[in-house]
Length: 191
Image (cartoon, rainbow, N blue to C red; front, side, top):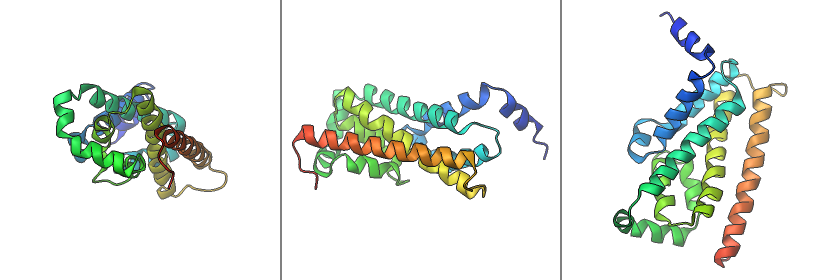
């Protein structure tokens, strides 16, 4: 099969970024998130990074932004009537804590529900941004790194792998600090 159209598409500077943004924006919606498996999608993008067809940090930032903006749109569009339907979910989040939202990012069958969980959690906007954006970055980075590793180019000299590990560590520390700050403002114990 001739793949010259794919090569020409990847060489154009605007199309890859737009495609990554749109795919991850669509993947953040509950219904399309089930049909578009984000784990496979982002892992495949990680493998593309190893071919130097796309830049690691560019994919990470654009994909995370697409996912975050999709979640923000869902949060914004949930009406008070719709939020009443998710009252039980809201209570579960309050009981289990925001750690359940973080864990849900990495479980395929729960991942499409994370935007609903955050929207139904009725978090103030600043907390929504502080929790959603780092978890989007952490999720994207985890599966991009998996794609890099599965492509078999992981070595100590691999720039993509070193970028992935560095960004992952920074995102994990930032997310931990945000969760600790949230816990302190809610007056709940950390255990």
